[in-house]
Image 1 (cartoon, rainbow, N blue to C red):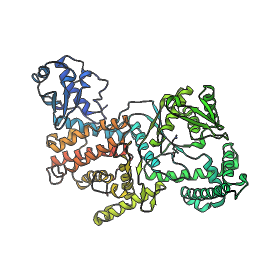
Image 2: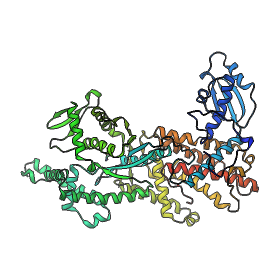
Image 3: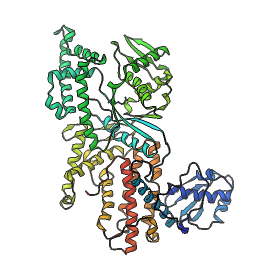
Image 4: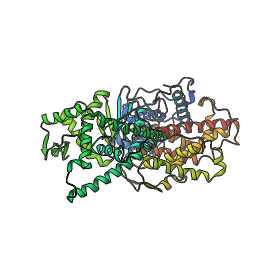
Length: 618
Ligand code: ARG
């Protein structure tokens, strides 16, 4: 639906009326409206169903707006079929030319009309989005395709008292974008952080805190302090083990290892004292994490975790596995046997009866199903855990769980050399701080501009995190990449700062031309003024934006959107000189300013989907 305030479409831009085509969305996507116009022309000439032809109309190669491969539909004398279309062709509001270029029918769109529809759609969607800020499906490129559908996404999910590694970094970055993309397609999304906060190591941590803990330090930076405590107690544990093995210690029950195991057992049994300590660690860690996520412009609806899984749900899972004959035993441990599916055998209960990672995920799935009744549940976790998720999903299926088909593991490759000047990265903070510092240095090197930036600390933090995120999402997610903070914070080349820079420049156009009245709608500007090859290229790329969003969504591939941003940034970068606002006539200024404002709208939307905060000055 076109937003209120927009007027009738002038006759010279009016596209023909079409019957609805299921796979087309002409009301929201100008490219679809023009693809339909092309399809209509052909389907009339050939007497073929519109929808069938529509699906064959593609964006053309170099310089060709839209194209159709005639062989896809006709056999024999292709040229004669092509002529049925070309011979009777009359230029209209949608198409200005068609030529037969074996094996394609190539179409040139009516540029002015195309510009009209693209700009109209962007500006009216932007208006609607502003009028309805709680909706995620008003902005250009979004679509309300899944009303009432609920998606649960488990991402980031770091482990308390352990380093935040590349796997968590990527899960955080990619997961946030996948969540946003789902909202843009009309899903209701619940973002869940499944903390690693359970297991024998938390018994160890508890013991360690009694020995090495410091209340002050814990309050100051719980994540770092707990990590340091963990390292110390772990070391003590290792040394003690050596002594035990050498026979220097004989009383096994008094060893750190045995006591840690006991503490964890107490935790699992719900012993209040054991739980109180642990729950304080957990709460403080979450508080600190939230602070860091805020810096990243990422939020969670729920902090859950391995500790929160119901005991009964785990017992239920184990019981069903046994009943269905899926289990076997090995040295006291209970395993599900998935060898038949080439998924090995997986422990679900340890010798001492305690749970492990997989048990908690099995029980957790049931808990979440009961609570959310999700239509889809995605886990964004590094590829190294592929087997784990296959085992999890297979086991749920074999257990006969009704929701077993609703899961998906979105995986990604490794990061090499994730380190900062201060050494190997342990926490998310380290990465962000370093990126911020590097950006701040770079900004300072231009004194004049630096003086105009209102809040340089915040700005460098935003560009720094943009750099880290874009570096992570530039390639296909399954590929590994080399972490390089110097490179990714560079202003030259296809890195994060370039995207922010383009947005800044687009924003500055409005600032620099305060006297140019901004048109309220596309109907107030003269589009013939915009006729310029550079403008046309940009219009075309703007029209491809909804496809980029949808492809990013369908393949869970943020890189598609990142590439769209780079491309528009390059196109705009090469238009500044020929499509100037300052110094032009009043009419030209009005038209061009409107044009730039719409580009900024779309770039800002793309950046927000990528979880970036678009900035106005840098
Ligand atoms: N905490 C885990 C790790 O660091 C990731 C958890 C992923 N989510 C899950 N449901 N297993 O490896």
